[in-house]
Image (tube, rainbow, N blue to C red; front, side, top):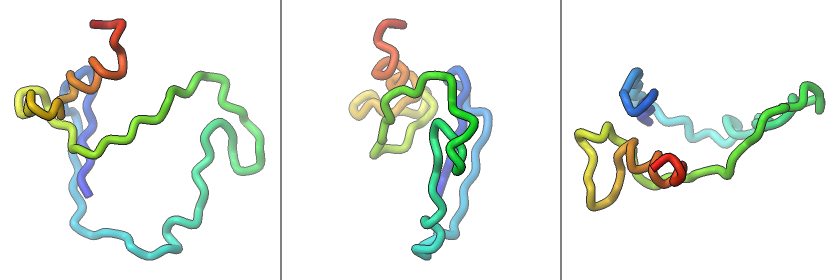
Length: 83
């Protein structure tokens, strides 16, 4: 598993783990979006449509224009009014 954190298109953190959790029990705890598990503390912001990527995002300088896997390409797709 690899995670890259980009802020304003710049890579600011990177982590890679070789171990993979394959136990089904690891996925039994629910993830709550918009409230806690008791239904309290509602989220008062606005959640956008989820984006699922099937490609690792790269810093623009290492990205491929052919497949558009750069951080800048993602921003252009998600925020077309900014471009």
